[in-house]
Length: 222
Image 1 (cartoon, rainbow, N blue to C red):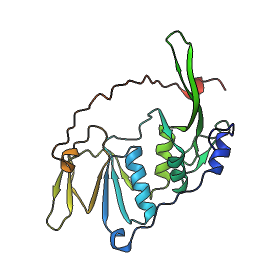
Image 2: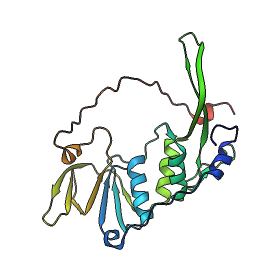
Image 3: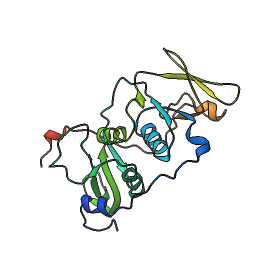
Image 4: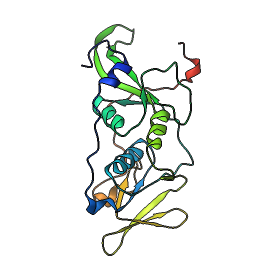
């Protein structure tokens, strides 16, 4: 189980490989357009590609990959990523940074609560893994066919065409037609209202806050 002293590499090896079910022949040829090329959009595209969909494109508004910070992964998510063929490793000291390098996965051993003076209130095992956003993003790109992702295209609105197809309009350049459209464009998605008339693009405070920061890897002690 994950409440052991096993290292990340051993746990990765022990994880099952969860494969995406194969899509029926009736839907494989449908044109799929994913709006948003962050982790959610790339993961959706990778799963569809693994299921046998032949025409999957991702459009991303930013000009290139974002650095991001850390991403938490539970065991099921990691097993799916493993099943997609994304290379994983639990060893961080022997890796060469390259486009084909595996994702370095670190094991999160525990979670704890402390008073403001540092007094430990509670510590318990935490069955989670962590990876760098940029590495996970690069790993998902590796399992997609070349040319699947187009950057610097900001989707603006949808148009339903006769026959059931969808036309996606952008702030510049030509529109694109598709049979299925996945909106993975973040918490302020402009397409939420197309799914539900009562949906709002305004963010709602969930009642808690988290403090996060980033450090350059080379500045950390071994």
